[in-house]
Length: 496
Image 1 (cartoon, rainbow, N blue to C red):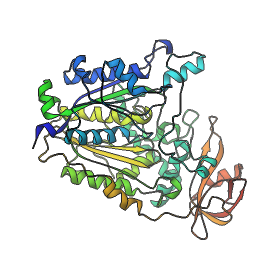
Image 2 (tube, rainbow, N blue to C red):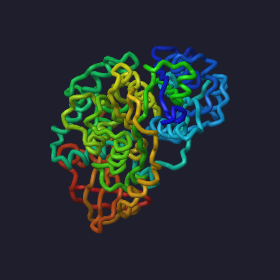
Image 3 (cartoon, one colour):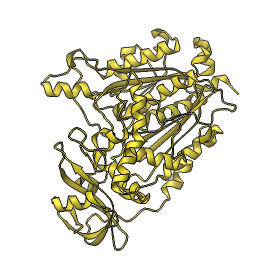
Image 4 (cartoon, rainbow, N blue to C red):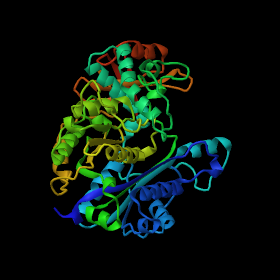
């Protein structure tokens, strides 16, 4: 097996910027440079060696308005990489970058790579509230290669993730036959261990251990956001965090003088997408893509779930974790924490770059436990894009060979899609739903995904009526029948 073509992670760096006045805070380019230098120091590289990178990949971020952030960062590092990449939107991006970079190294087209990302939304938000103009600009929403939502989804409020993920949650609850009250506590029980890990992580944004009851109980400070999610179980994007990973080949690591105890290998990986739009999904309680990603990654590594000793399961919302647990056949009762960071609601959710922190933390965990294996999963958009990586300090027994994702993506794409009724009329029933609450804790909008008598699927809002909200909040609404009407591109479903 050629050491020149064996990929390895050699350096990781993370930075969390808290309690810094906006005008004194590092901007996104400076934050990424700081994380990159920490990763270089972790590997024992000098800044001159870091500048020799021939690949630089930056995860897309919202903090500031930059025409070419990759070149901005390269200039700050004094680097001149020929291979430059700025990813599309998606929380799967960091793991996907590791997978793609490992393949480039295995093919001999990359010698030394830096992967990084950032968000400084906390600083930007505070500056806006104070009326301060920052030199690195304001929040920008950049366009991606493909929008994550259909026009009819957008028209009915299905854009913010806080409005969409609760719809998966309610479908999961109904599928498992739990009452509303019992399922709320299950959500708290799922995420309470995440808070314990965050409380022990000095880089966590909210290092506070909380009980299941505290997480699940709605209060003035823990209001419902999108039912059934209280504020404390939602990913928090208003953080200042950056992470970086340096990759190379085993041969190059030796030439650079990187100590063997720093090496972490990628043993297995995979990338796949579920049907792109939420209204196209097979259902709202499973994920064919996560299932396939798991099978492919474990097969490539020659390992199983039972071989894993460390996990970081993407945790933007509880439904994402539950679906991943189900599709990866993780045990229902967790003896091993499902996070090494503390998760997006408690460690912090820096936009698309959270998983770069997962990978960095996993590398540190595996170095401390040589020979152990760890699994990292990643998720983009609305349980849409998925990536996975299996890591260990143990050297692989066979050459790195990543299967082309297109070979298995075609099978996922062939899954039947329902017909979408953009303008829906007639008798219908609820397939899933959420009730969106305002900052005052009061419900103000309900979103319903339903089926017409012919099986076609639609999205609608309900009348903004307290009686309707009570129906959805106080009893099992999934399967409830009603009528849907349409006017001016807006569908309205009345369950009364």
